[in-house]
Length: 465
Image (cartoon, rainbow, N blue to C red):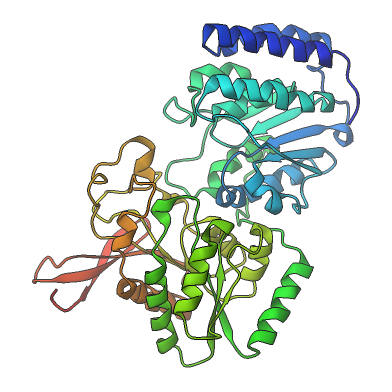
């Protein structure tokens, strides 16, 4: 990292611009550009490095761990396109452990974002200080991968020569900045991929536009350490040399995706009775789920589970996942890590079956990539969730506490387990959605199975309620 003239003057100008915005109670990005652009020009921030080996590239991904894993093919493609460049990656703290071992970047920096993310003034103030750390890099290129207008503002404030971002969908961006607020801060805009594609394809258009080619391999990656994986292989072998381990993940960043611990206990008891061989469960989750992990362990037969809930970071948990053969658990970042290491997935879903899934519904575009998957959905939306609005329609359930998902029964999840095993036996990698609904020809209910992107159902008779 070199030293650049004008940094202190640029920082003072940023502070003046923030003070004026605070006085007016309005962040005007046109004024920000008008105030800073002459200084960026004066001090050489609009001149690129002469050779690729000196090029400085900034990648910004400000989203969840699962989203970061789905962004990994785009990060890989950036390194393929710029093999000699110095690439810096900025991520939130929850993605750091996954990002720090990424072989395609040279530096990883955490954006703590210690401010109100919904307040444009607070975000502007944060970035007048945070972005100042990056001015001396003299970036040739900055890419805000995440759909937040604040990340576009951040890319501009770093002084990057080129800022390449996405054209906004429907004229909107996530967060408090409308697309019109930040469009002028980009030098280039790339059209997003067609609607309804998996989330990995949401990040690739920028990398493809810069590379001038389509990405052929979009499989997500995780970068675990061989030593961490070997430790878990040895631990599980010592605990039960002949056992087949299933990963059970009980955590999630949102309460609406939390299936009850008692339901997990019931399901796992059914799995133990079903399997003839030595099957055991590796319990994983974050520190907030430590108590739930203890409860689940106590509800299972002795020595049938290893409770590692709250004991590891995401990367270490991914290393443990790679030693298992199946994922049973909530929709969380580790679900995408499991898919990246090839584990089939069974997951309870909070999206009610009687709420039509829009093109960007989470179960449709954020499903585990490239592995057999069964989502088990509640039949009906509970009170308040029948007509989700705005962003909540992506989840179907609008609650931030366990709500619609609590209707998913252990019995239905067990049917999902059997369905997933059949998928594995047949070598299929379909994404299936399983739920109960009223039998259209007889009394009682039936189990419906919907395949992603295929409007075809199969009916299984069930005893009358």
